[in-house]
Image 1 (cartoon, helix red, strand yellow):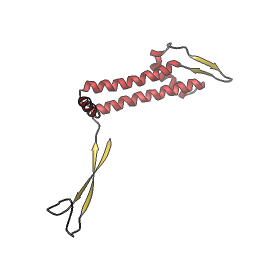
Image 2 (cartoon, rainbow, N blue to C red):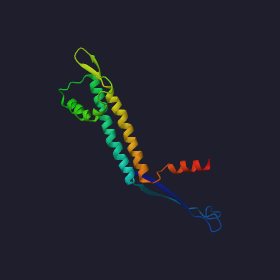
Image 3 (cartoon, rainbow, N blue to C red):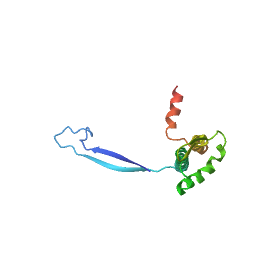
Image 4 (spheres, rainbow, N blue to C red):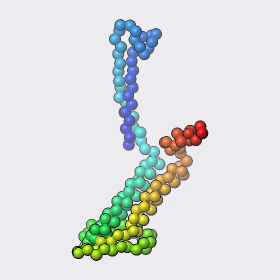
Length: 154
């Protein structure tokens, strides 16, 4: 929720010029802070939720990429949890590229290009879903008003 503070300044003058006081009387000015709250529309809230859940998935996929690359042990509950959850989301991309293994002294690290592809595809998918919802809503979005006016004047 965005909170905007609206400042209203009022001044008191004479009858001839209400803004400027030409007599010797002292001009009184008061400033009033009026909080204005702007609530998100249901469309915006849906967009925020989509970005949140896809962002959470992106973070989990990034964890997987780092854990695989560093050769993390699957004996750890956390590592097993991350691999289990993200494995479901990487099934569509499994086998696109070969996994590259590197044998170290104690661990074997792996670079999974399918995880990189998944991160990119899910980011584009989230963006596309939000844009599609905006188009299907039929409402003009903030910022689109100026773009429409610029096209009409050109």
